Image (tube, rainbow, N blue to C red; front, side, top):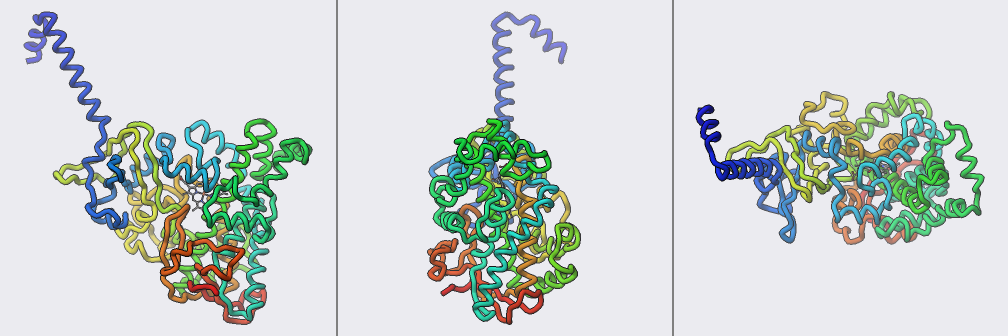
Length: 524
Ligand code: HEM
């Protein structure tokens, strides 16, 4: 047969050759097209928009599509661990924030590390900042960090004390102050005066309004002033010079590194502001809300709270950096469980810049009975990774919706079902764009939560909580949604309390005789 075809070919005239070449080209083109053409349209499509991703995953599997508005192309919803790793670890530079998300990131965080796209520019920015957030550096800043937290907590103790040992306060107000005080102190050598300075109030107030980090915060302008002056040669040119001249070991904090970069013309003044804005906001809100969610769950689960308190009692005095690293496994489990259930970024949305083939660990069974083992996408394809939903799946965790820190001390689900980020979750994302502040966040979370649990007892008042996805996952009290989710420091008495601490024992700075309850009631 082969011989006969070859023979036929040999005796073809020139028109036959042209025809054959054309057929071959069409076949190759067809094959290539089949490889690069989007196969998203073949995936299952849930019929009822509006149902939670988790329900859709249960019904349609880990990979499906949803219809976009205004006849835009369907959106790929991806919870498959291999597919996710492909995007966030291997190909993240080919998947950008969408045109909807990116301006919001710019407005809320600034045009810094979280906003920049493109491999070379992102790597350049990242190199500037990550050396200040290594484990070694966090350890070096641990005393400053603990002091910055304890100043805010002393104010809280005082507030509770002066209310006769039984009062309601807004937890987020205090966790916001603590995390802002910490990031100001350890990253920028700036004193936010326990979160009470005028600029601290501006920053926290402006977060509620969602205004631009750069242009609207008078607090930022105050904070920037020394830099502006330095850059115009008035404040302390010597300061930059002395930072640059200091021994390497002394140049590790974020501010020094950024100033050096400005001095070396690696960074412009405008970029410097964007970085400060990004780190103040990204470093403050996420950690604050994670602590607040933990307090809420501890209030709902007195036994878990008591077990954590018992563990903390095994450490004499305030826990040190090393204690937090290895001697408090239950505290660590409470953190992991909180971030599993309440990741501050409940989903990621990315748009493919190039055609791609996304591999799947779990094949999709199509309506026609066929199996799809990889998804072919075209440039412009929107992909949603529903972090919060996939971290709560019963099919992975057994009891995915239940807050049960013990699971982190037991055998975890099989690795192939889990993602490969920190703690097998995507709470800090994964790959080259994973959160650079992870170590700092974990340490400050542990410092603040352990101090609160050692000093207070939290109880639930039974108010129903709702969650809103705004810049990050926000808690709301049912029936009071219209009032928003941030507390205005200036008119605290008029705002509702998202979470409250209710103290009901005599107060003193010792660990044992402070008792507190958490409630979610209106604060008057
Ligand atoms: C519990 C606390 C925190 C959580 C859960 C968290 C989570 C995340 C996540 C999921 C991302 C990826 C966002 C995306 O890809 O769109 C991210 C990025 C980022 N985070 Fe965090 N974060 C936390 C605390 C912090 C802290 C303390 C800092 C600063 C010291 C920080 C600075 C940043 C920055 C600058 C980025 C952008 C990184 C890049 O694109 O290369 N975060 N964070």
